[in-house]
Length: 309
Image (cartoon, rainbow, N blue to C red; front, side, top):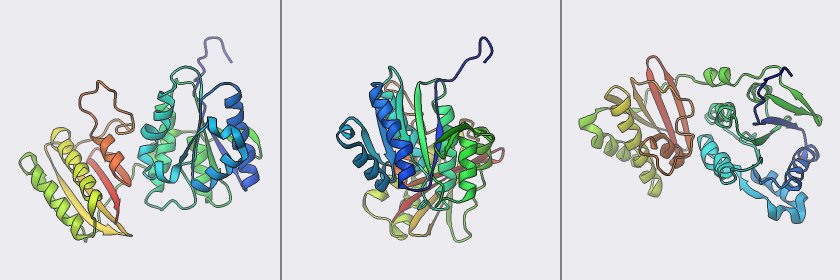
């Protein structure tokens, strides 16, 4: 290392495992080393793996925060603000350790692009912070494309218990590669809106969603998300936009399009400051939606939100 080289204190390895034995061998020592060093430790992984780690830790488990990622990270866009930053920000002094497993074999094709973009964006969200986030990947059940993406989103990988630098690390390229167009199906119902038609856009979206079978609190959440997105379109997206809705695979899907360009890939993924005025719209959308997909470019921005029926 040359004189004057600055080493980023953020550490972000991917752990490739093939069975329970390798999973525990890669995660439990990581947790114990953190506890021995007096570091705060959180484990946010799918439920079955959560049980494995908790059982293996025994009495030490009481010193660890556990989160079921299948619930806390159902929408990948919630993980940075609601799981990782939420834990790290509570411990601003010294190093923090987190195990985060946002990608598992049950993730849908619709969810995966948001998952891999999340993994890439972690590198920017924690740059300069004394945080270590270990991300396990099931090397048997996940396909080769997913594992290749893991190499691209993690500067270091752990294979067969050996840590090595990733030769294909490039999170910027991953964010760009998964910034894909989101065309709505021909069957979608649509309404154009501008500043004078914001209330109508919200009522239209709620009525269509209820017609597709959305009920209860989910309708209120969709109304809030649509209000935030359509207002953003009017204020930041050229003054107008289009809202579209349809039903697919047991979900109600709503999409808002406008002519604006979203220049900050971390928009909606930072916790709001206590003194922050405005700028909470996308954060709220991520909090209430089961999945959020975004495409932005020179021609405009599309935000697609999913709600389970």
